[in-house]
Amino acid sequence: MGFAVSDGGRTLDRFDLDDLRWAVRELCARYPAEYWRRADEERAYPEDFVRALTEAGYLAMLIPTEYGGSGASLIEAATVIEEIHRSGGSAASCHGQIYMMLALVRHASLEQRERFLPALARGQLRLQSFGVTEPTSGSDTASLQTRARREGPHYVINGQKLWTSRLQHSDLLLLLARTSDPPEGGRRTDGLSLFLVDASSALDQGMKVQPLRTMVNHETNAVYFDGLVVGSDRLIGEEGQGFRYVLDGMNAERIVIASECIGDGHWFVATASKYAAERSVFGRPIGQNQGVAFPLARSYAAVRAAALMRDEAARKFDLGERCGEEANLAKLLAADASWEAANAAVQTLGGFAFAPEYNVERKFRETRLYQVAPVSTNLILAYLAQNVLGLPRSY
Image (cartoon, rainbow, N blue to C red):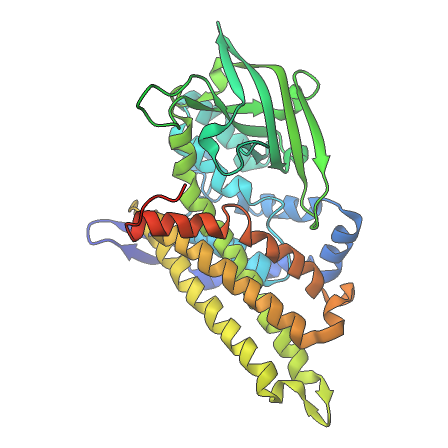
């Protein structure tokens, strides 16, 4: 049974979110804590889990129905992501396909959409990887150095990317490169273009990948481009407008990542509360002590509050309204809430929190990432200070 969200003039149909949550929980039950613990220990990609999500259609939620997707809303996609993390799993292995799909859906040519979207919806292709960050630019995207030079019917790409995640498990790579210098007096982001690269054929044909080990089981890489040839038919939208296309999906990314944090926060609170109710010291459950109970209650409140902001951001996104403030607030509040809940869980379980069998240390490491990426907490605060509070630009 569905419900609707209206902005007074339009109505957006929705599936019942309770039914959707139930369906995702049922799928995630097939991948219990042991599955994720083993993947973490072996540094293995959760291939079976990603395949199950693909077959269920969850990774094609934002693809329109005419191309084989479900044409779902962002709040529905965010709900799926939240439930994966609430079950103790991780969507980081595949979440990129959800929000990166918007670059194709909104800005690709008709020919590109007809060529790639049905194959992505069927799971015949994977779009998991996005090449933006570079060693010298970091979050300062406008200063990236990767160049794409037009030569007749193709572009020749040279440069380097860093923290390019899931590339080893992706058929396609969205790549942002500079095709021209910004005009004098213009925006620094002018002249950046977006390309859809065939990852498998690019390997050893001008693209080399160096895996990077991190503190979590998250496949990420340094990528080097040396004379990579990409056809002009792989340019997304207009040349020089790529940064605008990237920005278009950043609000969706923040909402999706906020949902991961919300799911993590609920998992930490539930796990720690169960332990506190069962663990007895000095003749009574430790959860009876306010020093244990109050941090968990405060964490729960913070997670619920972040979820409300996430819902508001997703609502505005789905209605086509401006939602930069809400999307950034959702990511900020959710990342803080999940980190607060993680620390409360560690304090509650004590020494057992450091034992892999209790899964807290794995989730603790995973949720710490959200203070840093994608988009650090400090950059969100800078955005809010400048764009919402009207304070002078700090960078």
